[in-house]
Image (tube, rainbow, N blue to C red; front, top):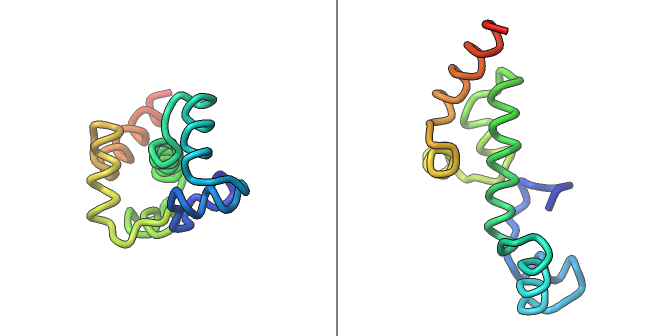
Length: 101
């Protein structure tokens, strides 16, 4: 999932990639990482999104597509749920912080 965060991953496709059953993947992944695979994937995507928004001029829609979201609206809702601020708000905040440093 790190190499292709924009791929439409499901628990079944992650399990197939790992060569184990869905239940085995879910159990082992959660035991090792501390959260279920798809929760981890969302967090990973949102970490990448925050970096892309801060460091590039890509539009919110382009970042959404790059990370596997069908539209900017769903991506924006997920980003705000994870980061507490909209993607454009995050971009403004990080740009202000970068200019103040």
